[in-house]
Amino acid sequence: MKTVKKISRLALNAGDSILLKGGQIFNGTLAINYNTNGTAQKLVVITSYGVGIATINSTTEKGLVINNSSYVIIQNIKLLGAGRKNGNTTSGVDIAYCKNITIDNIDVSGYQKSGLLIRNCSNMIVTNVMAHDNGSAGISVGGENFLKTDCRNIDIRYCRAENNPGDPTNKDNHSGNGIIIGQCTNAKISYCTATNNGWDMPRIGNGPVGIWAWESDSITIEHCLSYENKTSVGGQDGGGFDFDGGITNSVIQYCLSYGNQGSGIGLFQYNNASPWENNIIRYNISINDGNVSDAKAGIYIWNQSPSNNLKNCAIYNNTIYNNKNAALSYSTITNNENIVFYNNILVGNKEIILGKDSVSKYYGNCWYSLTNGFNVNGIANFDTWRNQKQQEIFNGAKTGINIDPAFANINTINITDAKVLASFSMAKAANALLINGGIDLQQLFNIPTGGKDFNDNVAQAKSIGARF
Image (cartoon, rainbow, N blue to C red; front, side, top):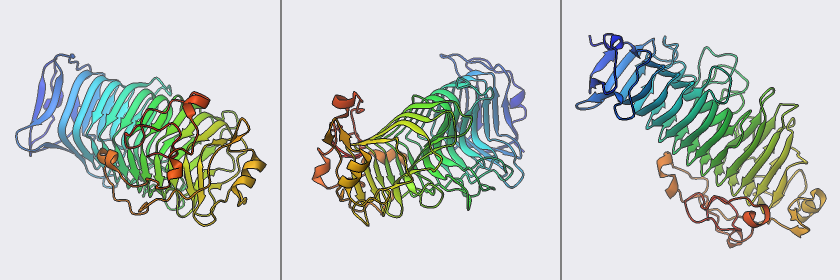
């Protein structure tokens, strides 16, 4: 029987390598000694050699553990636990209090908690991780001191979190997330995919999301795909993307969500969270999201905090389409301040907006009800709504349009990998009035356009929607 027990006793130095024979199975937990430190020039390497990749079968234990170490690279390894309901109660890869760690091309499954768990680390690069069939999450980043600086400089790219259904032992909080970041400053999630997560969360209440962040600062989620994520029967959330409580100075951009049980994009602030402010949502596409759980819309805005409003968020050049419910939904308990929608396509089935909000502002958007042409809070005429609510008016001039964007084949989506998002050709509106029907954000509000649209085309100054 091949094990990694002897390897775990080794004292590793800069430039050392642990080589596991490809195609072989090694039982046990590979635990790297505390204070294993390589250098930028001489990394400590853990990898497979020969044909194929090696598998660490840790059954009921963790697969790989690294603590208080630096300049280590883990690559080309498969980690296998006994299963979230079959005796495993841990995470697959547990990296804590480390810096300058690279994780590349690992497959991790069968763990009750997270496939990959990163705690109190800095300067981490995570690429090409396949985290599937775990419980709590595919990939989880967080801290233990409840500070936004617990983790710093985390870069997650080209990863996939699939079929992480939920932690059967967690009856008090959400589980079944795809990729989740908390208590972190300066992190980026890019070209990642999350799908079919959260369907077996063992409770009714706040639920999981495909890709999201909470209590963090300077987070970028971009060029990601989150589709067909779920929650428990009767549970909440189950959405595509989410900026949750305490998020500041962050952006979600160039992302696609579709068919999620919760909203495509959630903007949430729970009670006792730190301030949520100065965030941007731009050039994203949501198609038929939020039709199962409580959102009932592509974008869902929800605030439970009586003291910290959702504050200062620019939402622009997104395409939100829902053929069953609304484009935009406000929870009945929501309080917000300076939430502004610019140059978005907002298409709902009957109502375009669910819930009432007298604070958010709208400029240069395209509004359309598939059933009624226009319907917001029972007002069925765009000009009547504009005048009564004093929306879509800037410096006395009318903004916004009420037209059919004329989408073709928008309900037949088959894209399954974020790596090919740039070639996504659906959700392009054919109505020529959208090309120059919006407002100039840079000129009127000094808001940067980002320079490109969803498909990396040059962003037009007055175009409406995510792709041109």
